[in-house]
Image (tube, rainbow, N blue to C red; front, top):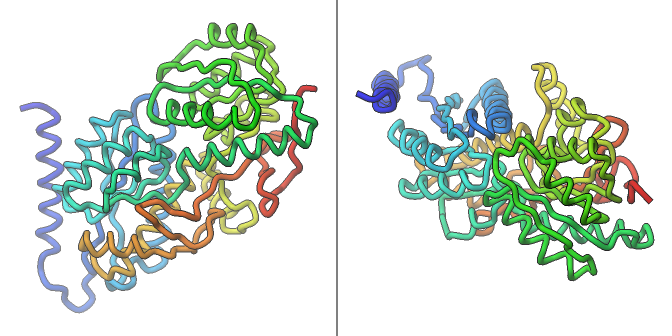
Amino acid sequence: MSAAHNSRRQFIAQSAATASALAFPLVAGAQPKPVKIGVLHPVTGALAYSGQQCREGALMAIEDINKAGGIKSLGGAKIEALLGDAQSSPQAGTAEIEKMNEAGVCAVVGAFASAICLATTQAAAKYNLPHVVDVGVADQIVERGLKNTFRFGPGYKKSAEIAVANLHVLNTAAGKPAKTVMIIHEESLFGTGTANLLARELPGYGYEVKEIIKHANPTRDFNNIVLRMKAVNPDIVIPANYYNEYALLVRTMQQQKVTPKAIFSVLGGAASSYKFVKEFPDAANGIIDCNHWFNPKDARAQALKKRVEAKGLFFSYEVFMTYTSMRLLADAIDRAKSVDRAAIIDALGKSTFSDHIMPYGPTKFVNGQNMGAQPLMTQVYKNDIKVIIPREYREIDPIFPLKT
């Protein structure tokens, strides 16, 4: 018998034992049946760091919800996480959905990467299993008419449009010193889709896209790409990739003394990362990013940041996006007053969830997309990350260009 088959049998048997133990009618003082939610992320493989950060955010949200009395409409039922590892691949993510469905989860939160989310939402749809997407930015995720799929954050189309419009505002205010752009992107759905959107948007604002370069995941050497960058000499470099490759690309640029007028990221894997800023402060300095970010003026966000840092972790977008997505789901289950999947899907569709730390306002889903979701523009400044746009969340004035 294979290890995978044995693991699957143990997973189902354990779940069956739990269900059996909880199948008897409640007696005075007995705890209500726990609410089982699948927490699915790539905690091993190339995307392991981001997946682990997402998982931490989900578990912290569950801890907070349970401490605050659980799902009150279900008699204070506690949320129980069933953890899954997508192993940084869509196929493994799909296999985990199958396991979670058999184990009787009422919903799933995950699964970070766009390509994985595309697969897991489709797999969950077969079982009418509610799936809250925490990060995955590819718009195809919410464009297939899947009634079970809800994305709390913005997609890459909205992010790219906001990024390019704000780049033009910054460049115009500076006297239009930047005219040419080079895009470096990772090869999967996220990077390729983002690069295509940017290539379509930028010429309309008068920018010449000199070159678009795709790289594999993982990539361990950017010397040739940076040599090409040096030859092309673009005014602006736009990276769209995950953490490891983003960090290595920018460090290689620093080592080869390639200094464009701006490194202007769209959903950059390391650009809005305290980990990157701490580990490579000189390489990170001045980078601008359009990305998922919390409301810096919300005291609850700062308190959560301190808690995360007290665990020895970085307060990355993976943490707070998944934290908030879990709270969104818990709110829907509470209003559904049920763990019935159809009831939860209905409650999510009608959500006006606003008790969160994101700059979104009340939640409003249209075809599974939260219409209030928006990215913020940040800049690395004095070894910190500060919001520069929009003005209502601004912490510092933008510095553009970095090189005159």
